[in-house]
Image (cartoon, rainbow, N blue to C red; front, side, top):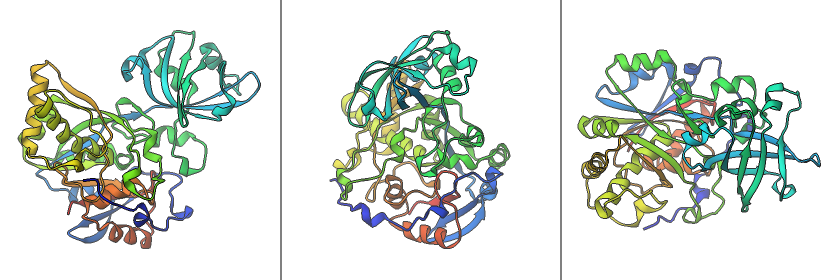
Amino acid sequence: MIPEIRIEDFNYPLTDDRIAKYPLPMRDSSKLLRYRDGKVDEFVFREIPDLLPEDSIMVFNETKVVPARLHFERNTGAHIEIFCLEPVNPPEYNTSFASTDKCSWKCVIGNVKRWKEGLLSLCNPENNPEVSAMGLSARLVSRDERTGVVEFSWNDGKPFSQVLETGGSVPIPPYLNRDTEEIDLERYQTVYASIRGSVAAPTAGLHFTPEVLERIKARGIDRENVCLHVGAGTFLPVKSSRVAEHHMHREPFAVTLDFLKDLRASGKKVIAVGTTSVRTLESIYYIGVSIIETGAPQEVIQWAPYERDYPYSTEESIDAIIAYLEKNGLKELRTGTSIIIVPGFKFRIVDILVTNFHQPESTLILLVSAFVGGDWRTIYDYALSHQFRFLSYGDSSLLYRR
């Protein structure tokens, strides 16, 4: 049954001066709030290795942010901003990034009313010869109210990944109210990012340094990776008063067969770094259910966790995915999820969460509330009264599930 939740119950006073507009000089020098058994205390992030249980697995999202924001102009002089969301043709990220002459992407298009037809040319105000040599153009294939399909074409034979690196900019969050700067190229990216595809950073991971990761390893904590490409929908506010009416965005994710086997065999506590890792891990259960019931993996729809009681254990679900992958000679599960995690959600995999402080009335606040048994205000009241910094470049928290 879909929970009846009013989004205004998840509001709090976030003023502009509490939003971290820039990262701190050192990644691991941010504050760290720990919430456990209803109690809150405070540390510095570099202390996190000593705060984690040794008998645990720490799961990171290894997605990499791509410079997906492109600025074009019409021959009339009108400027059109195009924000790449996900590939359409070819549909696989790796194949699309490897394209050397054209590809199509689903995009958010700014000023779209001024672009009904015709080719756009990439803006090049500084007359960069490399940008000129690409000859990147854009053609509108189709559009709806908020997004459109855009075909990009270029003529210098570079892979599309390099086209974006040359002509695009890192899409920092809109609530920072500033243009992308040099510092964002390094700091709006985790140190372990490796698989291109996100248009927003999994920001809980921005605090980790190689030194912190080494100390986590030295404590004997297992480190595992998943990959969920973060979409622009992560910034979308919940506009309807009833959360049941909110449309959750889809995000593609992948988990390897080896990871699933390790997860199944370990019996250890699972620490998720970021809400994207939580969404990936908790979606695994419902993928396994679809294999048990239909013989094949189905993408996780938004309200699937709330529609009925599921009789299968987490172990049965993971076993079903492992068996399916082995039977079909696959090394990883690649699918998508639109899961929404709200109060009333039954967590089946994640025990501990590392996450930043999120926007009021957002789906991420709902997830945090679900994770801490509704006690999110205790956490946010403490952070507000103790000068914590908020949102993507802000401080961090270590939350134990209630």
